[in-house]
Length: 421
Image (cartoon, rainbow, N blue to C red; front, side):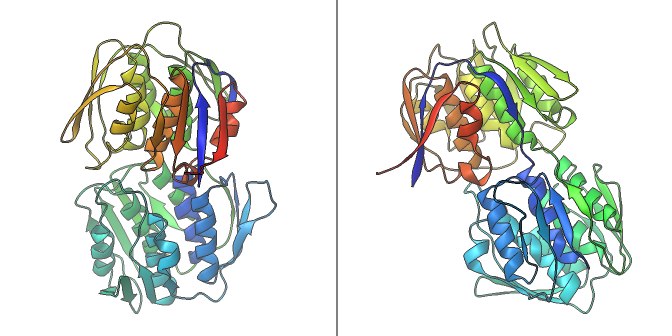
């Protein structure tokens, strides 16, 4: 295994470039299964999850890969598709379940292992499967696999119990080749959902309402290949905004998607952080103390759960008290014990955290439990006095492309080492 070793206390200064969005790229890559021709994707981040998605496409009969060793362009082309997504791949990445709908739409059959992914609470796929059944699929569970079949998926009127990003994306893909009209109500409004719909529309789909709580998909008989650029990663951008602010730095976050980070930037502004959008991104700096705030995670356009852990580091060093209410996942405070090891004063009660600001965090060995917890520990290490060792960074590599390289370029004392423990 590898770890990150961080010598904190250095203000970050310079420009950090935001990579393409992992959460947008994964469903868009899987949408290649729906297409009748080759497709080219630009601005794809080079991440472990992307490598898993590429391997999955290959196993399913849709060869895909980066066009060169360092670039960010992937080409894919569906050939003779195969119906089985094996556990060996699905277990490492929850998003793999999204191949179920496209396989049913193209082949009328599928066998997909139940997913794995970050251990941040129950994220059931029942909303996905119930919706597919309403569209005419017959599904059963067999030895840890979802096995499905249908003659052809049919349009349906579907209301989600709660806004589910994966469920909305999944059904948009499945319905694109279904017979008739599908309405997705109480749909997720996240920008990544919009990016998927925009890609499919570029390929000939008929999708409207993306970005609202009702999405209308009129099925078509086929979709063509296209060239498409993945949106920038709003969570990576928010993470770098937090890193610059917590160190009292002065950075330019190039490619930062301003509109998609409205809730995050508003909360940071309340904390005393200066954020100045410009044509190519956002300039961030802080000269005064951080101020405590109260924050609740909610579906988009509310404050994203994927930024909760990072903002908590800022709260841990802010004047006064702050509170966090986690409304999305019931087990997303696993970073709290590790931040406490570094001197943070955080008390948990169910889905609520109360943070009393301290003057200084102190470096310590810490262990990452999930992707965004990893990012929060890196941010804490950048601000802390002394040395921080972040272990289990394989979580981090699932969602951040070369994070230590990007931070080192703006002055961070950070390096990757083998973890001999």
